[in-house]
Image 1 (cartoon, rainbow, N blue to C red):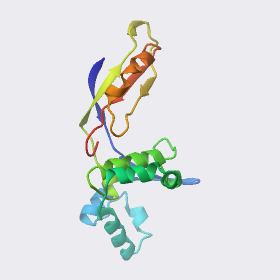
Image 2 (cartoon, rainbow, N blue to C red; image 1 turned 90 degrees about the horizontal axis):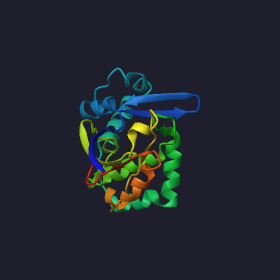
Image 3 (spheres, rainbow, N blue to C red; image 1 turned 90 degrees about the vertical axis):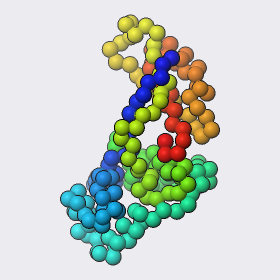
Length: 188
């Protein structure tokens, strides 16, 4: 067992899928617009269709924060009604693999609420060059392993830690690499 620092990144692009049409918007462009009110080249095609009042409303929506309790937010989005809402939204806001983004949205919303308040942009905080400790299990005899190994990531839930899953070494004995990231604390 070894502790290995691993870099992680939050969403760099916001992907929208409307049937045959797929679009992505760089998060940096939305953040720049929210801070300055200026529209860069990446946002310009979308903003041509918005009136000045709609643009002002979007800026307000991006920058407005609301108090949020992480437990309440978590309970709501794990409740069947909240999960259905996320599933619906996840059909439009997808992961970069064009999969339903509902679970990624839930994770981002809960992480954002851990700071005590939530906003649309706080759901996608920039986390480049952030170190996350990871407990890593690898097969015992790497020399005998195939050239590529499958990786299993076990993400602990609220109130838990990687130490609760140390039996994951058994999975590694079957030829898998097992990663147990420790993502405790606000904004993790």
